[in-house]
Image 1 (cartoon, rainbow, N blue to C red):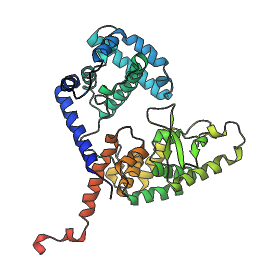
Image 2 (image 1 turned 180 degrees about the vertical axis):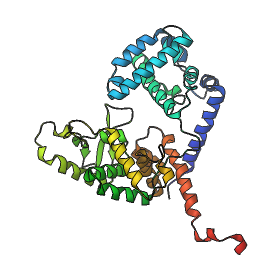
Image 3 (image 1 turned 120 degrees about the vertical axis):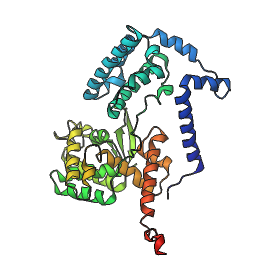
Image 4 (image 1 turned 120 degrees about the horizontal axis):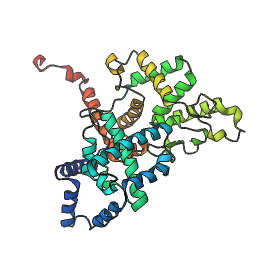
Length: 368
């Protein structure tokens, strides 16, 4: 069974309680009370506010588009962020006048009002991701500071009562069998097994290069979420690592003498020069789901089970195997424990389903 101690539950309860207070009274009022009660030390909030007022929106925008944070993004992300920047600038002009300061447009209240009209959850999260990138870079560059106070305002939202979707073990067995029977069987099987053996994201898998494999530490180096130019280690199960290594040897074993050998993309359509497009993996996986007989028709609809469900499956079965939540957080490379805790709810649903299968649970009281 997983290890759940009182400290974990206390932290979860505390975070939820504080979040409710912040939402009720606002972050600044909440912080002011903490200062008065000497719970947190005095800060230089007023001084930072003065500094914020001196940096105009146009200066921050000009810096951001030249920064590594923006330049390291994929071309499609850069185009999307330029569009989001235009929308944000227009909104700022309408509500704060021409060329407002960063202070005017980076308060929690202003950002909440900007995001409030967005109805579609996916669109809202994309806008929030852009704002986090833009404001994080701006604060870091101009004041060597961070946007810690804004993270809850700009956090990704999930639909109420919607749990992360994972595959059953029976469904995973069938998907792996189907991958071996189709076109590009070797590649597709390796892709699925890599997902299930490490829990990496789709963008991370497509970006894997030959030199990213470290057999000594049984890990791969991946470009983490939001860190396109920075690689971090990700552990893999031994069987998944061996499968991936065998694929690399089969695919690129004859060109080890080539100067750019270690830079070749593992999954590619042009001999490793460019990575396999994410849509190619998504279409391949969608076809497997459509063919699988163990997956109900209702789960084959858009936004139900997907490639990302493999990552959820990785986490869920770690939890089922007794791995504690802190270790899972590190293996998933989550920045926040709260991101990992969503699996506790899903695991609880699994326990309820399991207990109802107990032989004694099938006996009706009227039969006694």
